[in-house]
Image (cartoon, rainbow, N blue to C red):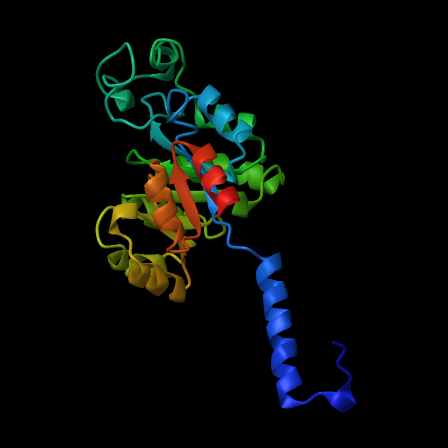
Length: 263
């Protein structure tokens, strides 16, 4: 059917509008971001360079990692305060100098990387969500990222800074208002909205188990993206997709891709 100005009737206009909306819907399908949790934790030891490389291989949009500052001042990529669970060593990672940390093995074969090493590996191929896991990590993270941004090796929107420690996020925001912030929360995600407003956050990152259609819609109406963690079971992935979240943090990025391709 061809519409010209002299024959458009109310009925024809409604038909025309339906065609246009249908075309937009077909051309712009719902596709949340896939974010590799600690790299590709479901495949290779978490927060290691091979795990991060595997996540990139699996086609993630972004990667989430955790950082502490060690005794000698380097930002190291590790999740736990204590080394016991994942390594052949014991004690607190923050109490060791990096010369000692580099000799530790993760699950028998991998090394604990520095944030610098992770940045060199990713090299802007995907975005990087840096979780400020340890105290005192906000300022050194800002200092490390600043020259990369000035030299335009990375863009500010290729990073997200997140933390359950909202005080660290406040420190980071006080130093750097260009790099996006995400508010991590393990409780009612709506409780994170006030701090999200205060820090002009990009997103709220809640536990997926705390989400429902109402609170996801509320967060998005307030202007924030929703990046829930950590969704691995295919049934849970399928369920969370019905809420139309903006991204999914997962140990198995290929499962998200597979479900999206079949929906």
